[in-house]
Amino acid sequence: MVINFITGNAGKFVSMKEHVSKYGFEVKQTTLPIIEPQADTPEEVSLSKAKQAYELLHEPVAVEDSSFHIDALHGFPGPYIKYVMQTIGVDGILKVTETITERTCRFTSVLTFIDADGTVQQFVQKDDAGTLATKKDETPMEQAWSDLWRIFIPAGYSKPLSGLSAEENRQVNEDWQKVSTFTQFAKWLHENKKS
View 1 (cartoon, rainbow, N blue to C red):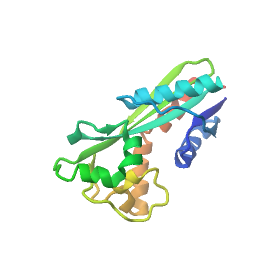
View 2: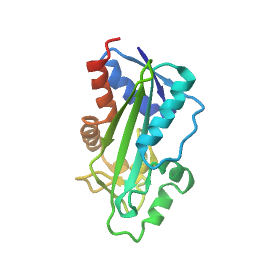
View 3: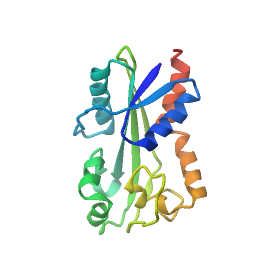
């Protein structure tokens, strides 16, 4: 089985490929003219995009969508993070939250898989809460998926992801990978799909 991973994000593709290839599955990066839906949950966004991809290809497809939630803003921007990043970016997020003292925030990731028969399976990862920085870290980033790394301080650390050492980033990544949507999906494929 070849899985069409619908993404323009090279980092996500590499991660997906690493996870599923160890179980003998092939994944290819595919870009399609998919409409980004406006929905209140990342589950809805991921499902909508996967269904659009499946309708175009009629082959196994996977879509991974992430959201970013700031507790003091009642979870905003949530699944609207892509639009927020395209418009006001991390500088705007910091401006909006500059008077907020409760700075707990978190990522949520949802991977939706539709197999060749059109059966849907979703995998959800809700990361441990971190803290929203009060200023943007300017450390050069090589492997970040997003500028949010400049303002997200993982639990147990005092600096944003972009400011952590290579060893600290490796540890954070290892912790996330244990429960990531890619890990969940790869294990599910291994246990449920034989070809």
